[in-house]
Amino acid sequence: MRFILLVTIIFLNGCLDKKNSASKSTVDTFKVEVNEKGYVPSVIKISPNLKSVKLLFTRTTDKTCAREVVLEELNINKKLPLNEEVAISFPVEGSNELIFGCHMDKMFSGKIIKQ
Image 1: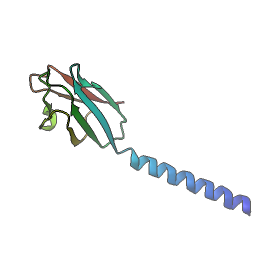
Image 2: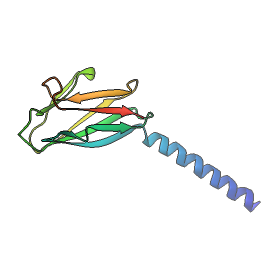
Image 3: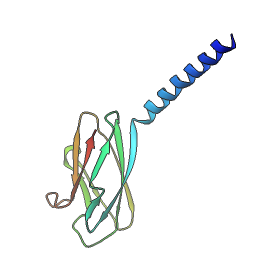
Image 4: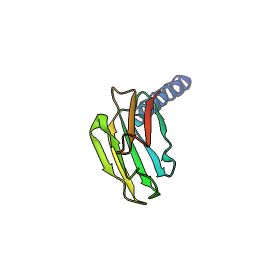
């Protein structure tokens, strides 16, 4: 009897852990530094189960044109004040790749790739 109870508890605990990990994988946050090299990291790989992404941009230089971030596909254009973190959240359902970059025809750019 104790064995059956123990197996049941272990099984239920495993099911709850899977449910919690699935719900945690619907949104993720990534930090992006905007410096002389551009957007670092320039490639962000995400899980296919993510439903939305939150990017935290911090511009650390005045030596480039990357003073804002543009995601044309989602009609997002945000100014990036020097040394201030700017949060941008958006859905990623349906897109396998999203490009972001500066306003000068993506002279500096990055991308989010579902893998």
